[in-house]
Length: 202
Image (cartoon, rainbow, N blue to C red; front, side, top):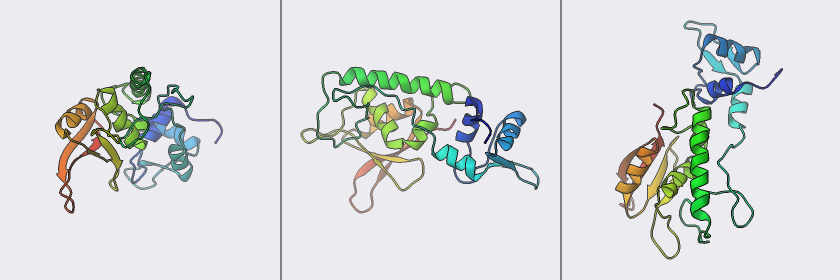
């Protein structure tokens, strides 16, 4: 690869179909990705463009531009998905606010239409952290050893997380306002109610 792709080209790579690697973009963007060895043009009509193995690797190895804020321990900001033992320090509210503002800026910079009302590529590859940040930024409290609250967990389904807790409807309203789509389900074995939440694409 002669040079790294531009921000616009990276957005095209990021928005590729997760299953097939099919790309959507302008003719110039697609031609440039072909020249970079990150895409190829299918020889058969309709001559769609797809990611090459190098394109897939670039997409999967994309660095995490996660909204980061120093924590009291000197590390980086980590969303609370529920079940953490350590209670947040007094600066937690500021860190959450800064992280959410950083995420909105990341959406603006990386979504192809600069939209901030729907999740960006980083959120789609960090589903638990992204959903947990949306909930905590809206003022919901995560579950801990002494108090009930939300729990966000990964699921086998692509681009979906499960959200548990005592107040599913408020969680759903928060996530939907943040650009996620939610449905309420009952687990067959335990009869536990939970949300299944996925980042909205349009």
